[in-house]
Image (tube, rainbow over all chains, first blue to last red; front, side):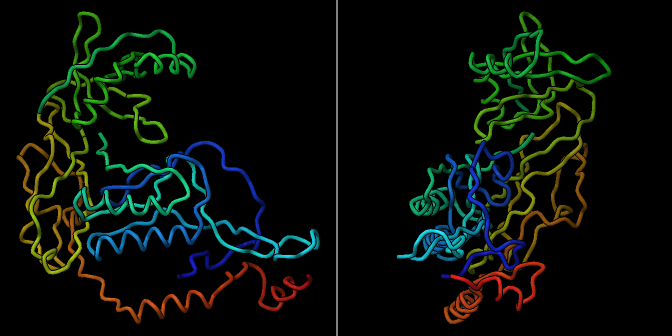
Length: 140
Length: 218
C-alpha cells in the first residue's frame, strides 16, 4: 500500500482536537459526475482512503476517472505496547483525514450512473463513516 | 422553455429564528431584488422550489395571493448536504432583458476514443451564456461520437441559436478523451515501494540532524 501522507509538515505531532459542525466547503460534486458524501463526522485514515480508491478502480476496470477529495493531513500518535505511561507523547502511528457531515469523499466521472453507483457502494463499505451517493447538480 | 409556478407568501421579518420556523413549516425564505427597487422578503413553497430546481429552471412564476410575476433565479443556497434549499435569491427582470445564466451541457453518444480504452473527461459541465430571458435554453446537447483518443471538444465548436452568446473563451475545452493510463504492474509496485521508503515526512524548518536529535528518548 502506498504511504499516503504529507511530504512536508510544520510539526511532527498534533493534538487530538474535536470535529465540530458541518462541512461548509468541499461538500459539492466539483470534478466528476457522481460522488460519495459523508453523513457523519469521523476520521478516515490513509488506509481507508487507499482501500476505497483500490475498490473503485478495480470495479471500474480503468474506465472513467476517480477523484479522491480528501487527504490525510493529521498525524495520529500512539504509544508502543507494554510501555509505561509518561515519557512523552508517542510516535506517529498513522495519518488521517478529518471528515465533517457533508464532506465529499470521492467523485467519479466518465462512466454511466449504474457503474458509478456500484463502484461507490463498494467504496462505502470500506469507509468508517455513513455515506450517501450523490449526483452532480447544475447551478442556476 | 417551461416556466414553473411557485406559490409564495410575503414575510415582514427576517432573521435566522424566523427563517428556521419557516423551514419547519415547509417554506423556503427568499428575497426579491433588482431594478433599483427596495428588496422584498418572501417565502416559497419548499416542494415547488425543489421541483423547479430539479428541472433546472432559470425563470419562475411566483404566485403571491392573486398576483403572478416572473423572476430570474439568481442564487440558491443549500444545506450542508446539498439536499434542501435554505434560501433563494430572485431577481426582477423584464422579458426583453438580456441575462447571464449557466446552462448545463449534455454530452450525447459514445466517443470512438472511449471504445479504444480512452477516458472521457467532461471539463466544462455548464456553459455561461447571455440571452433574452424567455429564450434561455434548457440544456445544450452536443454529440461527441466523432471524438477519438486525445481529441478535445472546444467551446468554438458548439452551435447555438444566433441570439445566444457564449461567455467563454473560444479555445476553452469542454470535453477531452484521455488515453488509457499505461502504467504496468511493475511500475505501480516501484511507486509504492518508493512511497513506503519515505515513511516519515520532512519537518519544515528542521535540518536532518536536528530532527534526528528530537527523536531521541524513550
